[in-house]
Length: 232
Ligand SMILES: Nc1ncnc2c1ncn2[C@@H]1O[C@H](COP(=O)(O)OP(=O)(O)O)[C@@H](O)[C@H]1O
Ligand SMILES: [Mg+2]
Image 1 (cartoon, rainbow, N blue to C red):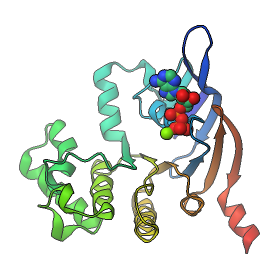
Image 2 (image 1 turned 90 degrees about the vertical axis):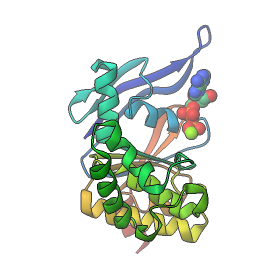
Image 3 (image 1 turned 30 degrees about the vertical axis):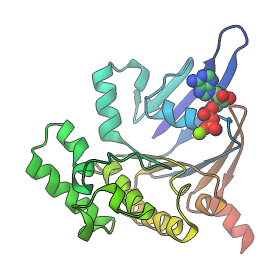
């Protein structure tokens, strides 16, 4: 469960800009939420606060009952690695590492032996449909394949939360659709909570709820199930 209690993130002294402005949000385990809104509305700030890369100026961010601002650096890093998977528009893979090495890296950083880590990485790569490509490096793979590696890496600890910043933003529509279908299947299997920033209405339909941000505030919340029912 993710809970934001009156969270603000301010920038600047003198004239203060609110990247997020007193936001309250509660997301249940297994829920999928799309975050939409114009550029500069606070979407990335929201993700950064939830994964602990950034700290609120006021208010509390609580993940699975833990207020992340109260953790020391080591414990926050560990929470981020084990409980929160992240995928990005630009995939953020390490170019000199193979698919197996990219996916096993978080395990290696947690002290898992190379053999075990690579075995678990290859099992996850198989799960995302890349079993024949594990020894390739990202620059030898297509955009869709790179995003599959990034998804395998994000889910290697089977985290309760997956954050996605425009996961289909750099993909053509067919490939984007395949990635959304893969996320649907993985969600069915692992029941992780998904928070996905997207500009794509189609991607939002793969979620349960859409929240729209403007000027750092949540200006609307729509249930997708209800929306689909209205269309039918
Ligand atoms: N490091 C920063 N310094 C100053 N202002 C920032 C910084 N990061 C973000 N902002 C401001 O906060 C607002 C929200 O930014 P951001 O969360 O990146 O929006 P989005 O992801 O929706 O495009 C914007 O007005 C942006 O200019
Ligand atoms: Mg952004």
